Amino acid sequence: MHISPPILLPYSPNGIFSDWVFQCMPVDTARNYPVNPVGAWHGGIHIPHTDISSAQANPIRAIADGTIIYARSPSENKDKKPLAYNGKTDDGCVLIRHKILIGEDPVEFVFYSLTMHLKQVRFEILSNIGQRIKREQVLGTSGVVDGKNAFHFQICCEQKMLDVLCGRIDGGINIAFPGRVKPVYGSEYYYFPAGTPVYGDIPKGFVHAPANLTTEDLYIINSGGDTKTLRKKMMVSMTTSAVLLWASIISAKHQGLIP
Image (cartoon, rainbow, N blue to C red; front, side):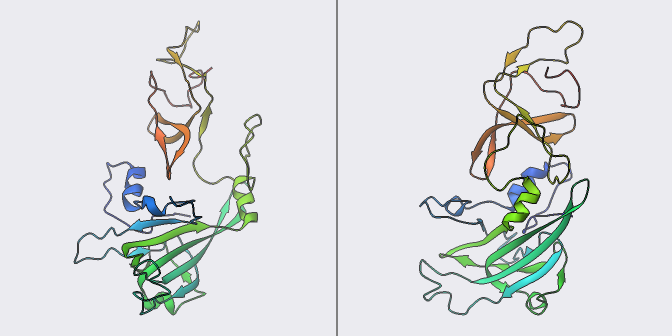
């Protein structure tokens, strides 16, 4: 299954895909996931308007193939309570169910994508609840929430589906044992604990002293050619912050890079 952002901006073939995704999905830091600055639970993120121009609205789209489970037209009184409890708020929304097979021995994984605060929902969406929808099909246009031009977006699943995807429903990963080789979805990553020796080149023959030792837990999570990007074991908003090593790390596929 291919998954794309709910908003699509022009993409340069020479660009970095992850950078493009963040451009399509800028996050309002006051309405982030999973907790707002005021300490309230928030199940998704708010994405500000990303219209190409004031005259051309950039529509919101389905992120993947699926089935329309629920759709609602926005109410007319967005400037009155109860909708306007903290400013004008649109309440148009679309809920889509997605099913994919994951793992070497395919296991079904079901998840949902929810888009809210739409100022307009397409007729072909409203009139086809229970029907199939294609990835990148237009759902509608972004509205306002609390007087700000933005819409709410989230992905969620049942607890049992989380267990299918992650192998657990809470807690951390026991890194003392090998990971699963069956149901897997997403990118591979490599874990480097603090104290991992780093070399300026692939060690050959007698192993020389390392150029340095890492001082914190690191993960290789972004592949680009033969070079991997290392990032901290620390969440900053929706992303992790990049760290610079003393020496460049060659692809983890080369044996002997990290003894």
